[in-house]
Length: 348
Image 1 (cartoon, rainbow, N blue to C red):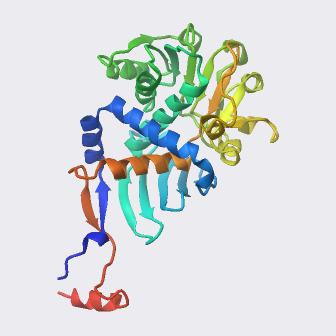
Image 2 (cartoon, rainbow, N blue to C red; image 1 turned 180 degrees about the vertical axis):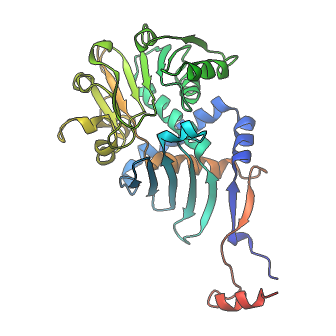
Image 3 (tube, helix red, strand yellow; image 1 turned 90 degrees about the vertical axis):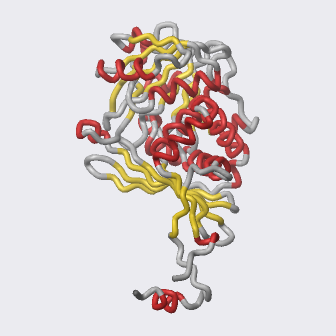
């Protein structure tokens, strides 16, 4: 039987190999690396194909495809969001992704993206905070202590120098889990009994809850001037975390407005509600934080270009390592016109 050629083999990064890679690089260093790749791609934002994610909604969750291309590489992520899964012992979000060569159309990477998405989401949050949070921010309130909470905390530590995190979740077990996982990570952890207690003294307020509903995790009177809000929990139609009054008082920054107006916090606001695209700030075209009393709000829903950046990083990082296996997933007949002949020659 003919062996597949190297060009027909696709590097595959499994969950196990992704975890090995992260521990090899170091989680904080990997956060910094991913943020650098995302920042590079945001600076060339205008080169990319852009479309809101292709979503299939159901009563219990959503399944989405997130595609984009810079003209040389094409990437997509498959991802679901099922808040009810937690009660069934399953992940709320799972994902995998693929990167392909535009010239040949051949895939060049297939990888798990459940863990990688957590890393890139946190890295993007911290990258945004670098431009939007008050200078010298050292304390963050982490409201919602589920699967993202540790990643968000460590990304803020690695990229902006966060020193303290104040945890709150309506499920005390989630807070205990997060506090336990962050032990020994070089950051002060304070467990709080109310969201009001959590935001005391915090310059950055991160909200990341899972319930698929219009919720008010932060009420208008809870948010004072001079803070940065990192709103990452509102990520589908009908799911928000902030009172509309907070949005009205804030300068709101988004990834891709056509998607954020469907899925983000600003779905609560009129269609002409003014927002700034984050890439414009990073590229130096628009201002970010301009004053001490300003409330900045990153209404993050996750966008395909961030996944593209993460895929690009993994492709580059695994070269010359054993953190992947080659998959024989592309038919590669000696004669490209003789696919049937290849099949026949493989007959037992």
